[in-house]
Image (cartoon, rainbow, N blue to C red; front, top):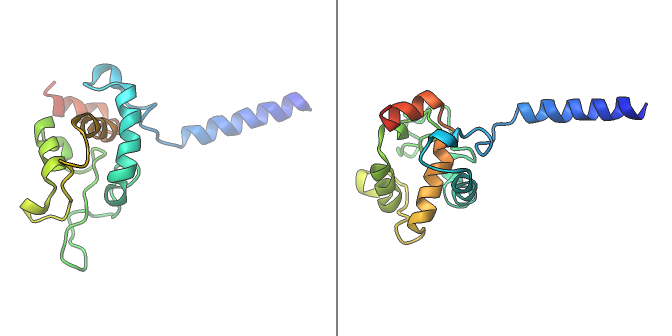
Length: 142
C-alpha cells in the first residue's frame, strides 16, 4: 500500500511538472550566448521589472498585441519568441531596454539608470530562454 501511494505521488508530480514551462530547464543554453545562471538571475529581474507588462514568462498579456488598447496605446508585445523581439539583435534589444519605448511613441519606461548592464543582459537571457531553437538560430544568424 505504501509503495502504491509513493508510485502514485511520483506519477502525479511528474505529470504536473511536464505541464509547466520553466525557461530555466528548457533554455537550450548550451548552444546560446547565455548560461543557466544568467537565466536564473534574469528571471528575478524580469519578474520585478518587466512581467507587469510582458507577462511572467514573457508571453504578453493580451491575445493580439498588434491591436490598440481602448486608450489607443499598443500593449507590450510578447518577448517569448511569439512577438517581434527576435527580429532585433542584442544591441537593439539593449537600446530598447535603455531608452524605453517613449521615443518611438510607445509607453515602455527607460531602464538605463534602473538596471545594470549585467541585469539587462540577464533579462534578455531570461526571455530568450523561451525562444524555440529554430527562432533562436534565425536570430543568431545560424
